[in-house]
Length: 311
Ligand code: GLU
Image 1 (cartoon, rainbow, N blue to C red):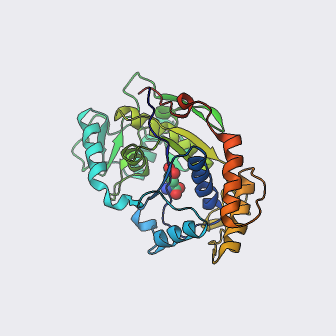
Image 2 (spheres, protein in one colour):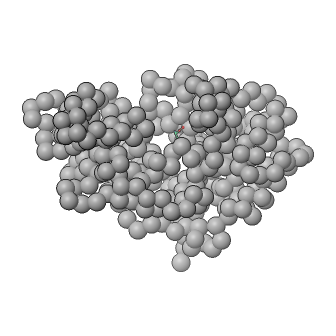
Image 3 (cartoon, helix red, strand yellow):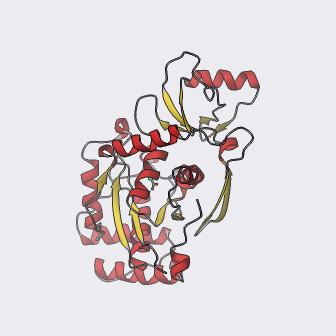
């Protein structure tokens, strides 16, 4: 029996240079790929154009190179892949799993208030399904995914390599989520699922703040008959306010102007991943961490390494 190759990826949004938090996700995904003798790709997730900062993608690639992490293929840019996302949306629409929605945030809040069921998740209102049966003559704004047909459950269970069993009922906890936004931009959930499959990603290693998106992504994979990769969500670096480190709570751009600076930054990232401080040159340090990562995280058998959940 042959198994698909290990292909991992780091998928930064170019909203600014790498900081101590994003370097942890980059290092973990690189180490996991190297520990499995696999490929490591970089995908620039620049679909949310208003949040993208000109030049940030080039800076990130430069910072990764300074840390000795070079992708095994040319980076891909989501801003150039709209045709693939449109094809996926068309397919979901044909299957009756995507529908246009005319609701503004205010419409959603009003609809929820009338039913007395106002629910929120991470600041997002749980969509009450207003436009599921049609637009009633109103203009389409966004496109949504039908998380569960009436009477069906959208409960998804999956096993994270670090966090263990996770379960989420997407229709109850999130509702029918957006695939294409009212401003015409592609939603992260659709773009990430299409690209992970198109690039043959077998293993997703990313920050723990993204754990909550995984059930939605698995539902989309199933709807599009795509394989489900393995997932490993890594610990987060916290900012001064105890929340995930970000530009908003004081993350500094990493200044990686030489091997010593890179080694210092990587040592901090390694500590967050429970790896011991490494010594020697940058190359030697990376080799020590690959060795340690292999002992801690390598999947044992090829079957375990390449298990894909049934669609
Ligand atoms: N682009 C996302 C971010 O920078 C990461 C997406 C992912 O790894 O799935 O937060």
